Image 1: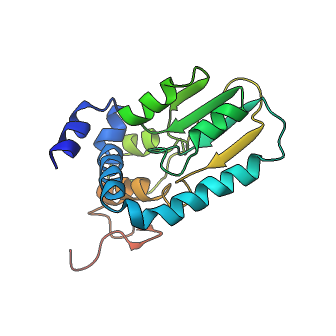
Image 2 (image 1 turned 120 degrees about the horizontal axis):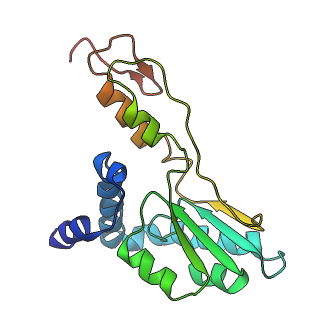
Image 3 (image 1 turned 120 degrees about the vertical axis):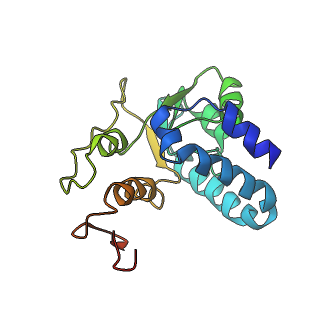
Length: 187
C-alpha cells in the first residue's frame, strides 16, 4: 500500500487525469498485476503473441502506434522497438516504470493524450447539461503509422468519461447513459 501511495504522489500526471481518477486506476492496475501476476500470465502471453503475429510479415522500419499503452503489461515493447524506427506510446499518463522502459530505446516516444478527446470537454460541461460536447481527438503528427494496436482501450474508453457524466448529472432525472439511469429514485 505504501508503494501505491508513493506512486500516486510522484507520477507526473495531467490535472484532469488525476482529477477524474485515471491516475488512481493506473496505480491500482499495477498493484493488481503485481498481486495476480501468475493469473494474468496467460493473458499477457496471448497479447504478446498477438502483437508478434501481427507484425511478423511487416517490413522493418516505419512507425508503430500503441494507443492505450497503459503500464506496458500487454505490450512487448522490446519487440516493437526492434522492429520499428519509431514507437509512439499514447496514454492519459505514463508511470515511472513506463518512462524508464521507453528511455531504454532512443526511438520510443511517449505521448500523453486523451485518445477520445472527450475528457476536457466533459470537464467543462456544466452540471445538469444534457448536451454532450464534441470531442477533440489528439493530433498525431508525422508520417503515417506502419502498425497500430489498441491496448486497453476498447473495454476502458467509456468508463471514466461515463463516471464524469454521472457525477455532473446527479440531480438530473432525465439524464441517461450506457449504464442506465444516472439518477435512481432511491438516490
